[in-house]
Amino acid sequence: MSTLVLASHNAHKLEELRRILGPLIPGIELVGYEGPEPVENGLSFEENALLKARAAAAHTGLPAIADDSGIAVEVLGGCPGIFSARWGGPERDDRTNVDLLLWQLTDVADEHRSAGFVCAAALALPDADGRRGDEVCELGVWRGSVLREPRGEGGFGYDPVFRPEGEERSAAELDAAEKDALSHRTRAFTALAPEIRARIG
Image (cartoon, rainbow, N blue to C red):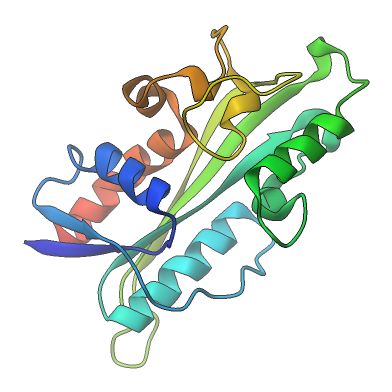
């Protein structure tokens, strides 16, 4: 069985990606990553996802996947964007991030609270013969809007304040199967799956 490293220390993300990718890349084992994480100094979701995938591939000598994701709010010019995980400060606390975002949108009318969850999914192969290995990145977007207060106990990050298009519930009120069918992460990794199969399947 081929092995694919998930370049993240986030247990929630590992569980979610095993659910999403399992049916898409049968015969490929998805394993967690315990190595060092690079400085995420890219200027886009794609750049940061590739930085993480390259670092894990170099550290383990195995093909690696990574994602960089966040919420982009239109009235904030696309922020928090790539800064979503640390929007509320260096502690990277979900509740602090959400509270700051809601405060920033306090006076914004409901019709102007459009947002999208964005995910860049990257695959990097280990370096060979002193050259950077093959790599590819795909982008997925899940559109919706920002609620006025958190709702629901599921999910993580900004899920409690994100209402997907066509839904009355927040992303945190969806069950795992419902979220997996719609999410930005599913869209990005579904697009990446054929590239994974072509290279290591």
